[in-house]
Image (cartoon, rainbow, N blue to C red; front, side, top):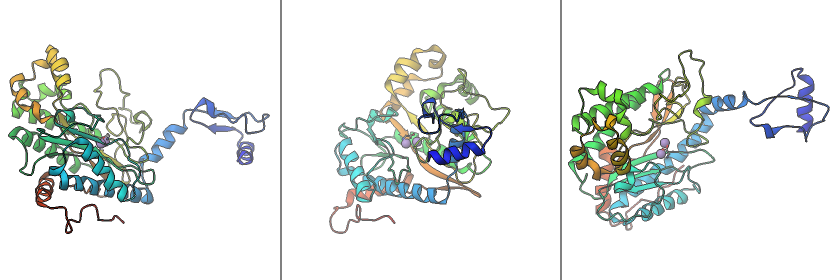
Length: 375
Ligand code: GLY
Ligand code: MN
Ligand code: MN
């Protein structure tokens, strides 16, 4: 290898060597009389730009990671009414993934029931499910170094949503996710899907009476949606679950700006940034709107700040606190004609049907769950 580098440096009069960091100097491995010119700025954007577009083989591997995770999510739904703790859910999920050949997870699974679902990165996964209404499970397996990232939020009993409020919040997140996914395709600015999600959440919460204000424009301008939708719409997914650093995926768009203090903190992960490239075939990204009723964020921060408090009806909010949090997350491939939703884990009505059928199952001989292989 040092020979090849020296050969290349002799052929290249500029003697450019692209490195990521200062400590990647070649001084100990090549002839010390050769003085390369180190460029520490160009390599990361180039690596990131190539990581954003997945080729056929990468897509096949990602598909496999998603398929295994989808089977594990479906199995959890099938068994959920007989599981008693978040830890049991976590364990069964891992059991299925490992049985299907994935030893590793793309990130530590998040299994949050009741109010635990209101914490974005809840990893304790050790609470009882007793008396809880919903469970939010964000879990994705890894296959040959490539990731998947799936979230489902579902009731813990066979007879559907535990309350009218839970059903309303799920329906709002579901419709938001469906409409955002439907607008994706080549040439689309992903940030516009995020703005649609923000608007739909604001409109929905106004309609339910949780937000108050003259109209949706006023509510959106106030920034109060962040109190209940505190993250972006999604991110690229590939070798890392958040595949590339946002600042490096830059299109040279003259209108693009860097994130500054006045920008919304939710616009941090590519492609949910102002400077992100427009969507192209071969990109794989998540779409994951969510609405959360986090006691600390709402009662200690937003309701204590008069700027935000005037847009939140505390009395109505109180009726919804038990919902905890609802997020629905799918993994989407951008294709030349639009998109393909790669995620097979059930959601919406199909998800409720799997729970109901699972509650009737004896999990005996005829039960095929955990036995299905993935090719
Ligand atoms: N599971 C991490 C994320 O959804 O971004
Ligand atoms: Mn995600
Ligand atoms: Mn996730």
